[in-house]
Length: 306
Image 1 (cartoon, rainbow, N blue to C red):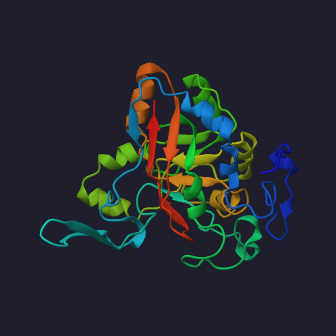
Image 2: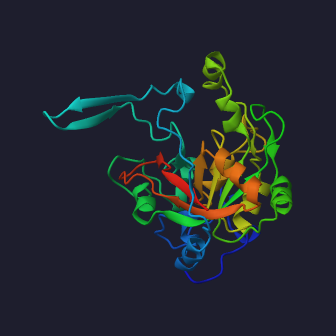
């Protein structure tokens, strides 16, 4: 990462053909971290001072939390087998790293013919190439987390959450948004999913309707200009679904063009209840993705410490 100030969103160049702004080269020509570069040693040290009680909150659901799995994935198969008289090992089959709480990495989505983050155009390959999730695993994701609770209405209905709504939540909660924050947004989707019966869960597994962040340029501008290091939500895709072709994709704006780390299906409910009790909405955020060479994503392995 260079020492120069980051450009504002409207100062970023447009990518030919797409007409969308990109931050390629902002963190260096060979960058593989994207906005995680904003988790500087100084910001990590500041975040380490946040916990008061030393109480941790698991933000990561079990690998097989969703039954049936979403969007046609096969169910996880966990086998425990005897190695010899005294020892047992595990074997996991049908492991989809993005089937439960996870990060979308910089190999998850490309900007059409222009490629992935930084203009990398080669196709992903296991164990090789640039932009693999192992680059995030090597340093971990450690910083100040901030939770914004915007639950309202039916989280299983398509509802766009605007930058103004996020600003209003921060003001209502009395929490300051700072550069380098890991922004966690609770839509209420996970709490609603927990209340579903078996038939409703089967329908939810193929549904593409849920509340999420607005997908347009205004949201990309707001997130970039706030200098967030990552964005994580409790819904299946961060952004509102179904999308609108006229508005475009927030995934495309954030992952390949701006280099954001995107977290999906985060379990924020217990953390939100604790924040309501004592009025503290920031916390130490710690996540260690899988060290999977060339991976496009990973289980989040994330906790919040207060």
